[in-house]
Image (cartoon, rainbow, N blue to C red; front, top):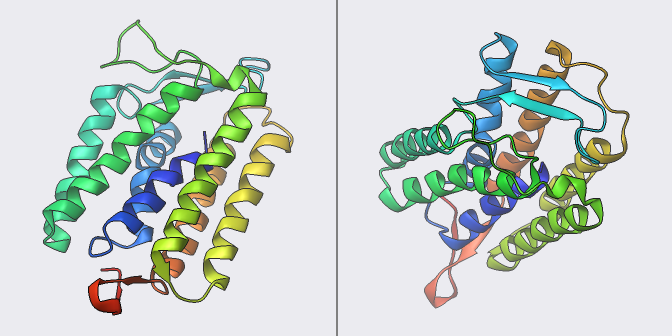
Length: 224
């Protein structure tokens, strides 16, 4: 799953308008992937390209206990939540940010072939929805668009920025699904993935700076 990970970010930003802005939740949504590709660059966590590994994705993510185990994801979520709570002086905002980080493991569990662990080790988990593109594709697009619509309905402001953001996300997803698959796992793949996350987050920051949320009494307040 790629853009589907951003669905919880849209929901969190819309559900608690006094909390962190959308860009912060976008970082939370892909935090463990930021960490994974960073660690892959220095050889700590590992993947390899295996054509046909699943029908949709040729990635064999065979060693990623520090980011994509349940315990590892929970640790990243806890750390990020504490940082956000302290930075924003907002416990609820920190909790929501932590939940968005934690949602990554759940969504990966739905789509990945069994490659997720509880705390490292040999036992792996994953429902393998990537082997059923007729289900995985509409699911990913559906949850992303539903969350985006929820965010738009809860907020006010110029429509251009969020429409550009969702267009960029859909374009990235199309490239991910229909572009040529990578021939090998190397630093180009890792940096390209990090660049895509950075671009998506940059647009989310832009959107978050320009959307406002209706408060009681009909007044509009910026997301904090």
